[in-house]
Amino acid sequence: MTGRYYGEFEVGETIDHDKRRTITESDNQRFCDMTMNQQPLHLDAEFAAETEFGERIVNGLYTMSLAVGLSVPDTTDGTIVANLAYDDVEHPAPVRLGDTLRARTTVTDKRETSDGDRGVVTMQVEAFVDDELVCSFDRTVLSLKR
Image 1 (cartoon, helix red, strand yellow):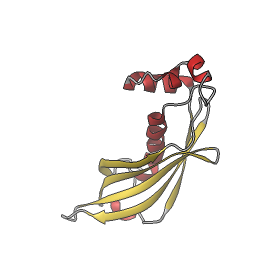
Image 2: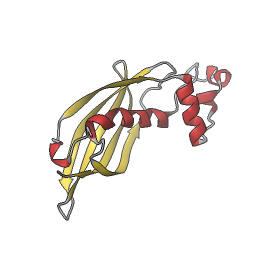
Image 3: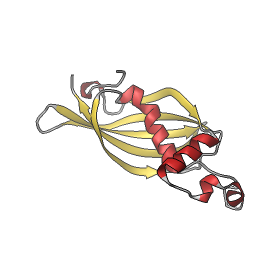
Image 4: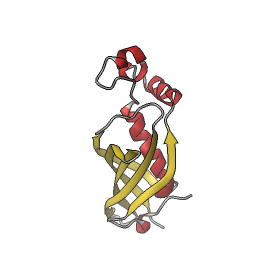
């Protein structure tokens, strides 16, 4: 396990995640297929060419899911009971096929549960392509204590 236990999170700390992922056409296609999202903006090159983006863009839920996945090894791998919430999701810029995504997490809040056995940690996760913010959201988890 590489994740952090409740007591290892510090409010205000920022974690730049080393893992990155270049998004392929196949990644986007499989995600859309698995989630039954057949939005042509993600899948139809001719349709997407006529939009303001001029090309297909990556499914935003895949972008968000990938940002979570990139953050898990440094934050919650093996050390949480559950994800409790994803809030305030924003996609300020599109992600294109072939873009490489990186993530950064900032711990924004933490508190013990009422029984004191576990803790609730809230983190802001941001995803970037180069230096451009492409997705941000708050992730709240129920964390184990040592």
